[in-house]
Length: 486
Ligand code: ADP
Ligand code: MG
Image 1 (spheres, rainbow, N blue to C red):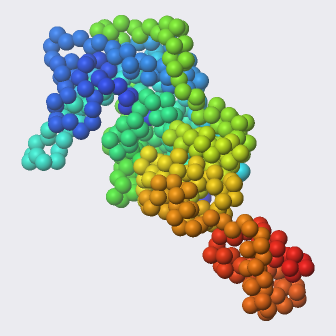
Image 2 (image 1 turned 90 degrees about the vertical axis):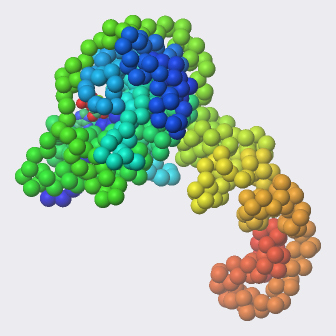
Image 3 (image 1 turned 120 degrees about the vertical axis):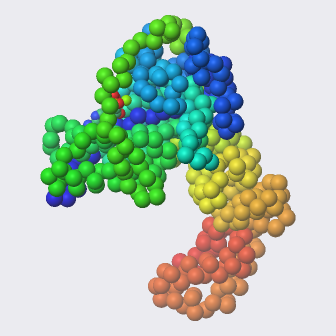
């Protein structure tokens, strides 16, 4: 039997570290990379007699997410103790939320596929709840010992749980990317995956097509890159199909992905919720969120990706695909709008092409983020404006862009001036070039007359070459046609 007889089912749990300055129940700092244990106060160390005090900023992050995904922000939610024993958890329990989470429902819209073939799918969210992170065990640099660093203990997390709505590793990655874009967009998480600020657990099961029941799932823990997520799910799916086709059974388990082998490996059989002996934390009052607070946060929320996409289509006449691509991340959307503001609305499509095309490709090639682009929005706007008023052609514009990228000039105008790249639009000058080329290329002229279309392009090429690329291509075409009597 082949993979095509099976359906893949995936649900994702994401831990987004909230971008607050201090921890969720103490005033210790959350900054990454400090010396071990210098950012752990008495509360984080669980010294006797301490009490947790809830950080307002963390709650505000949860409200923002609830609003952004169209979910419900609970007027009253409850913190619960999740009990387990582990050296990096000094209290012996994690403060989390269980029966009454701060956010429930809502959804994330994915775009699948490329270009105009792209389709949309909504992945429903089950819930999002606030909780604290644990510390870290450190094995490196010790002999027969393990070090405990409690700097991370008490760092605020929002755990965002999806319904099992995804049907392939590609959908799972699209979901993780869309959620990552959203939490960074609304500013509740820095999204730094290397530092563990955004980590996903993928719950994976397979079932025979047409089977009404879901299969037993295994949970792949702590995927901290989109590429690893794809690889891990693909491996896991094949492993489950092979196991079932060989007559085996899937046992619910937690597994780890090993990037060096590309394989998933069982870590432990999965605990059930009752193993954690959840109960409401008696040290914390229920979290009460008044409607006025939600309204205040709503008013401060930036324009969300979907709304911005619709506005880009309406205001700038962009296609759905262009608008969605430009609003996939906030910095891209802002950069594009800055270019349009400076170059003029009439140049919106050209601006979109340059931001998604040349600029994106160049950044990708040098592995740079948009924030590190050597070409500013002002500079690109200057370039786009000169394409718009026919000072330069698109191919000359690429040279100007390269020069801007290399820092050879402060503006497109300066580079065009310095390098003498201004387009020749004087028809007398172009006509002279056309005549010279026709005289020197009799063979192509005859071929064209004999019906060879390609010969025409060759002649255009010759004229452009004679003009060192600076002749207006449209004028060259028209003049050539006229001279050839075509
Ligand atoms: P737990 O309480 O053990 O974490 P949940 O019921 O909260 O389990 O589900 C955790 C995640 O697993 C959710 O994202 C959910 O969508 C997903 N999930 C549940 N059942 C399945 C299944 N059979 N296959 C794939 N994913 C599943
Ligand atoms: Mg869970």
